[in-house]
Length: 184
Image (cartoon, rainbow, N blue to C red; front, side):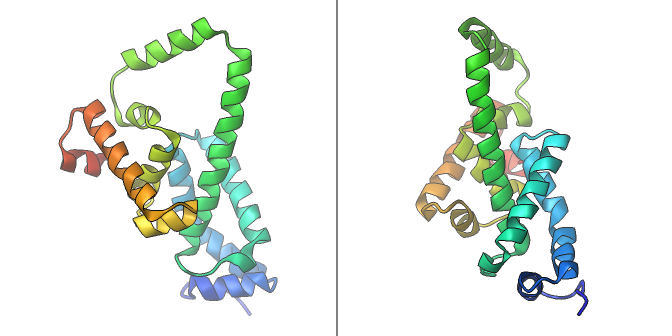
């Protein structure tokens, strides 16, 4: 049976779980732009975003039977990709701490602070959890409930991260509420 572009994510996931490669290919085709855009919004360079997206799809294929259709396949895959990206960033941060003397860390932080406060720099200054929640909410268009499910975090925690992150972005960018939400 061939995968149809009008088929639901749940149906395609069921077919993919039974080994239908065309069904999984259709799911990837539908969700790839969103997954890549989320990773780039979170701060990944294009090559890293592509690598992590590929790893996310491999993980999704391995675990396709656990897809519960509570949200879209794209949202489910974006949550996998976001977790993989954060894991990669943590590894890199540990390596940087080992390789870089403290004085150069301070000068790097100072140079970042001296740069203009554009959106990417402002997002980079948020905590990992705030950046992830803001990116999933405004960059990927997920609801707070979908984010809480994807991150396996309480709904109130997600709402707090989004609110706190938006406050910090507004302060850094010197914009009003509606201007910030439009930019993110």
